[in-house]
Each structure stands twice: as C-alpha cells, then as structure tokens.
Image (cartoon, rainbow, N blue to C red; front, side):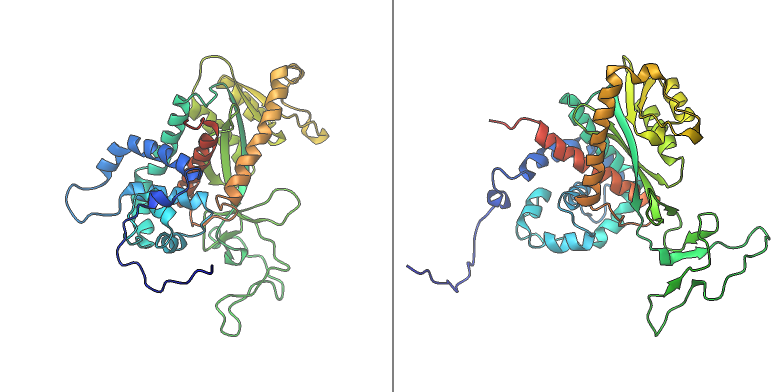
Length: 376
C-alpha cells in the first residue's frame, strides 16, 4: 500500500536529541572523555569569569565546539554555527536542547583571547593526556619526535619587500618584476616576481608577518609554520605539540624543548627520529637530558658521517624505535586531512597554537575511544 504525505506538521513533541543518536555511533564514546577532561578545568573556568554581569557562552561549549570542528572537518566557525542550528548531534554533544538557538560565530573571536590568556587549550590537552595516563595507555620511556610544514592562511601575493632600515643600496628591479596593483578594478592583484628573488631576509607577508617561506623536497616554497609533535610509542598518542616559526633548525630546537618539558623519568628513555635530526647538537642535547637518541643515520659524504655511533645502531631497541617512528606520520595525516590543518585558518602563531593544541587533543580522544574496551 502506498503511503501518503501528512501535510499536518506536529505542533508539540517531546524528544531528547540523545535518543536520536545511534547507540553504536563513535561520538558516544568520545563525549564522556571530553566531559571528564572539562571537569578538571573547572577551577580555571571559575577564575576566568566574573561573579556578576551578563552571562556569556560557557567555555565548556566553546571547547566542545572546537573539538567537533576537528572531528567533522568543519572549515570555519561561521560554518559550524550554521550547522549547529539544525544538526541534532552537535546540539546533543554541546548539551543544548532542540529548541535552543545556535550561538553567533563572533562568540569564538570574542572569547578566543580569554582562552589564550589563560592557556585553556594547553590545559585541556594536558587534561585529556592525564586521563589517558591514568588508563595506562601511555609509555613513559619510548617516544618519537618529528615536524611538518603547515601552510599559512596568507598567500604569496601578500609578500612585500621589507623596509630599507640599514641604509643599504636597494637592489634594482628588472622591468616588469615585482608585484602589480589591482587591474580592471579587481581587488585581487596580479603578481609577477620574475627577475626578483624572494627570501625571508628581504620579504615579509603583510597578511601574516610571522609566516615564513619554507619548503620540503622539490616543491615551491610557501608561507608556512612548522608543526612539531612528540609521540609516545605504545599506542601512538600525542604527548606534546607545538607550533613555531619555520626555519632550518626548528625541528631540532623544538624537539629538545619538548623532551625537556617531558622531564626525566625512571629508567632510560629513548627517542626515535628521521635523518633530519642526525646532528651533533641534537644528539648531545638528548644525552644531556638522559635520553638515548635512536635517530636514522644520515651518512652522506658532505656531512662527514653520522652523529649516531655504530653500537647504537646494532641494538634491537634501535630497530624497534625506527619501525615505530613511522606512526607519527599518521598523526600528521589526520591533522592535515580530518583536522583541516593542511592550510591554517588563523593569522599569527598564537592563535594557531591554540588550534593545534585542541586538534591534538581531538586526535587523542579518537585514539582513546578506539583503545578503551567498550562497556558490556
């Protein structure tokens, strides 16, 4: 029998958004972990806001919204707020009722400075990590460090020559070289750098002055930041994450800082890395911190040999660290594809550091949901 369309809309109904979410949906396993981590931040939230005044959007909802943006590859905050208006799963995750309106996208920008000043994203990342440590999902001896380039929001068209402050003679520009202005009334300018070299010493982006020209491999240089991750080798969870300026020593310097923040542990610690970390300063810094460097040897002739001796290479632990270090590429792939980090959405290192820490926490939440046994 053919069914008919009922034109009469339901006038009154009682429904809980949680009843509409499937029991086996992965988000159901993530939400308790988020709630437990936010409970640890309750004292911080109390200090952030005044006791009297107009109520603002709870910081718990802003952090949950940021986690959802990373999990569901939502590009912008305005797009998230638009989807929050009609997506019942999002309302259930944030603890909203069906009839509650979505908050405005400017709420993120208004509260972002407060979150950054109180380092809430870092505290949230550490709270998620501490929950995993209590569940004995972390290794406290074996780690892997690596870095990658994250493309800045600024485009190459935003590059302009730095002001001549040293009194040096300006380089003559060839005919037709350098950026052009708008053409035919279009606000998007045409740029022609033919005949003019660009470098971080002579040029700077007017959109994002902290971004630097960088590249890896045989690809054109782009305005980028350097993202760094310290991973534990037991389950591939992120232990530390940082965003820095992109330059040739960024990976090694940041790697030593993250190992220093990790602190000395009982027993001997090891750290695996690729050939880019095979330098005397990094190897010596690891040994001063009590960490055995299990770094891939870079034996090219012009470098004069590797900083890793032959005794370390022959050990079974070295081979195991080299095999496990490849899992860190899974983190970079997830951050760039699912997390939306192939091109950063904010301007400035401080704002992007907040995004990196929340995205790293979201990755750990997904990993924990897959590692922890489901309740019977």
